[in-house]
Length: 204
Image (cartoon, rainbow, N blue to C red; front, side, top):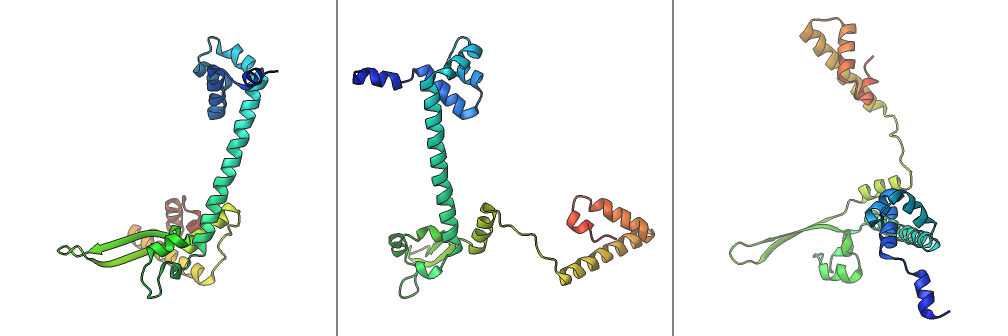
């Protein structure tokens, strides 16, 4: 078999390529066939998908997308890890001054979230530089979310006591303002807090 014939066996028509793109984009074969310009989308979608070359192209594109997605995920995790381990000293020179060039050369400039430079209105000279780095705790929380390591907050006796005290104050205000008994005030406060179960549990 000649190289030209081998190439032709692997090449899809323009309509087939558009069909593949549609299937990958939204997964609806009939819609993909219609978008590709087939005159009879319902039967031709089925026939097109039976074509081995089309199926191979769809599988190859899906595998490529999965590989790219994994790379993207790995990059996100790597960035979050570096943010979690942020050390501002990596951005400073020997004199404790911001060293952007050094940070870029060292490959740690991604730790910087924002740089604010103030200049003198008359001379244009730089008067100050302020650097904000990424929040290491926020990065740690995001990583916990990625790996499913979130934990419910532990009960805190002092916090519970403060919340009960606030609830009691709220009940007292309702009773005083509306001139109602405690059980009525409790029901009214429950109605107000029905969308906030974390507070509602303290209304007893």
